[in-house]
Image 1: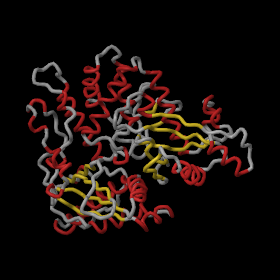
Image 2: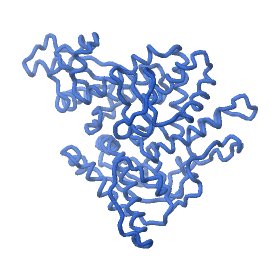
Image 3: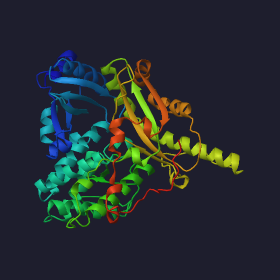
Length: 461
């Protein structure tokens, strides 16, 4: 409210009626949060408060002056621009919606659809989360069971490396809709049964048939990133959940659904243990080579901004990795097999990926390399491919940096920060990652389930 009054006063507008408010959404608003959860908080501002200046500059300065706020950084280039910070130690995602009215708090309280329909694209995407939450709460028959199920699914996704939507995996809203779907169709089932039914339903789901909580779903092709595993927001008019799924990440999701189904289909068995379902994914045991990505900056505050900016473009890098492998494979075919007429053009759909045996599994967890002087964050992406082909890391980085530095904001960040890439093996993994490789190979064989990934791929170092 202080911010809205300040903006209105500086512009000489109706500062006595200008208002702003906040709304929670996501897992926090659904009551399915845990100790490590963040809080999604939507900032609702008036028509006179712009995103670029009044939100990212004026409001940011006000927040930086609050003793409760720490580790604040802006992510301006994402599909949904936002600020991210800790408030009394709790992580907060803080996107912005600019309403076409001066009294934003009153308009949001009324939830007037005529006002909401006239917002810009990013604001509409933010409001979709609030609208979806309200619909889920109305549609779920037993809120307590839904909350328990969603907590279990979020833990499963985090332990199995499926929890970062920027890398093509699940966002919280995806898991919330899938959990609500199961709860609506089995309102009298116990929590254990609901979790088993989740894997049973979606391991056999006829993708790309969309999952919908409202009307009977019909086959349709969603926008880029949504065509492999489409999930519909429970809103009118219907729209797709934003997604960045690729062939590789979709393959891993299906594999983990099969694993969950195999483990939970007979929970009454005497040798069943629920902890198997939530065992950490064994990156060090599964992959023999990794793409190591190091993001560094001179100061911790600059690093937070840099990491947020680069992560918002990680899907481009994921596609560049695939492109580099595809290019190398094509050159291999051309040079050694005499196939000179080769189409090297790529699209975001990357449907040629599986036929070439290229597989990239980005680990969402963030590591730190303590041998580097500057503050840094390190990512490891597991790689599997068939051919013994050299990958040109310098070309990969050069191509990716074009998308990172594609505007003034990106160029400014690049001037003070750095990114390095290299191909490494399991011995170069940090202990925190490699120690998680004590895997479910120790599980009984009849519980291992269907393996979608081909185990006879050769990992190339």
